Image (tube, rainbow, N blue to C red; front, side, top):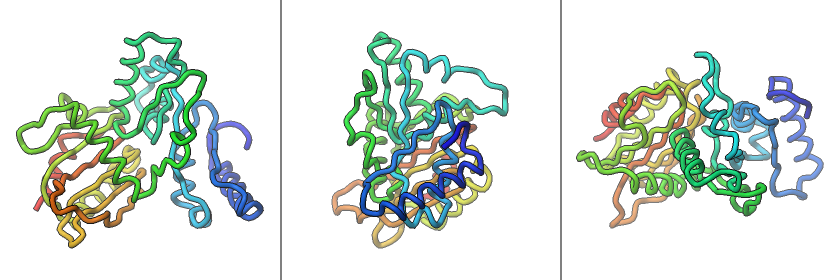
Amino acid sequence: MGRGSLSLKMRGDLVKMLLKLVKEKREKFDHIVIETTGLAKPSPVIETFCSDELVSRHVKLDGVVTMVDCKHSMQHLNEVKPRWVVNEAVEQVAYADRIILNKIDLVNDIELDMLTRKIKLINGMAQIKQAKFGVVDMDFVLGVGGYDLERIESEVQLDVDHEASHHCEDGHGHHDGHHHDHTHDSSVTSVSIVSEGMLDLDEVNDWLERLVDEKGDDLYRMKGVISVNESTGRYVLQGVHSMLDGCPGKPWGPNEKRINKLVFIGRNLDEAALRKAFKGCLI
């Protein structure tokens, strides 16, 4: 498809190519895999699927897979860029639903552990697999369901249960997510909120709409499962930048703990402000 990052013209070419594939080979494929160039930005590809009506009618985005070179990626992730320049390596990790840590045979256990921690600070949402020579099970990279609201419920459950097991309760009935020690971070990080309690769905909608209005460019991904004052009681949310999507989830079980779980990934996230706004939506 030509070289370089996905400019507007290339987004147009991508749309044309996808529609051509759909038209010509309707019954002949299950998945279309788009491989971007080395350090292309993932967001234009994601937004093409989410915002183009013709494309979204025929194909849906399954997920973003990022391959990380264990030997060399730490220097790229730590590279200091000028203030308004985004670190593309960090962005690729931030948008991922699945991360493959490749070339694990070229690093020692300490280096691998440091890299894994770094990646989890940027993206507390993605599932991570280690690999040599890029060998991973196909099920890990296809049928991801990263943008499927029904699947998100179990994904967030997974992420946050893992998260909660690594953090102590803070005495207010909820577990603290990443970056307890700094409330405002100019780098790309993830913030998890795990809390019992009932939320007012209208208040949540108002809060998130305000959030994407003010911080849409900096908010890369958002996923959540919340307990709301509706008959079904459970609501599933997901967002990319200024695009928000939500729908009722399956009802809570009679003995199930109603725990709200939200994960935000982005730049300049103000964790204290996010927690305060969340608390403001509690009934």
